[in-house]
Length: 224
Image (cartoon, rainbow, N blue to C red; front, side):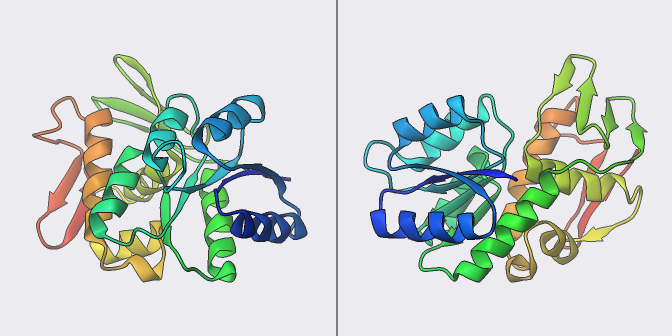
């Protein structure tokens, strides 16, 4: 049973989410504000967080930053803020998905299942070695000369797709569909944000990447 933390100050929506999640056998914790969310998450580490950005005591992006200091659990943002810049800010902070209010419960539940699948290690997976880093896909472990590097579940998912297809050009549409779903096939900013994050963590010189390469206007390629 996966533990889900729901952070939402709208009491009616919070109740609806709790009922729907518990009906599907999720273990649910709830919090009406950011401070409570961080306290609950510390006491009962979640497998996934559903987070409203418009909280009464702090911006939800601050909660994302705080959680990412110690947790790699997927964070699914709910927000009435639909501007692209708001989405990019939340994703850049460490969120894994972004759902704009109002939303359909079936879509939200599908996104939850997808996020939890991505966060679950595969039983067997190869180890990829380059001159800059080593990736153990089964253990979800990335190491460089400076030590172990932490990735978010979405970063892992994107990186795994790339490294499982060495030297192969993967289109932007393919990567967006695989990582975020069909409705995100035009959201190329997502890819730019996450590829930049991966380069900062993996490449010795992120401004001149050797392994995570951009093919302008086409897609991305992993070069071992």
